[in-house]
Amino acid sequence: MAKNTSTSLRLHSYLLTSQDEKLSLLRQTLIAGEQSGWVENFDPEKFKARMRAKTVS
Image (cartoon, rainbow, N blue to C red; front, side, top):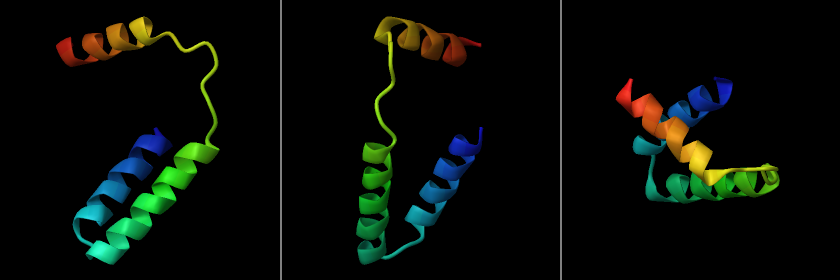
């Protein structure tokens, strides 16, 4: 949940910033993503099924 909130706040912040600040924020976000590592045992079909179930309910 904290990750979603953080992402939402970043997006809101992104919409209110200058071009240079947007590029800096994008770089920081890409670095954070690269450093977060890989998910082990990821099943894309199960993931898609969970996402579809969320949008239906």
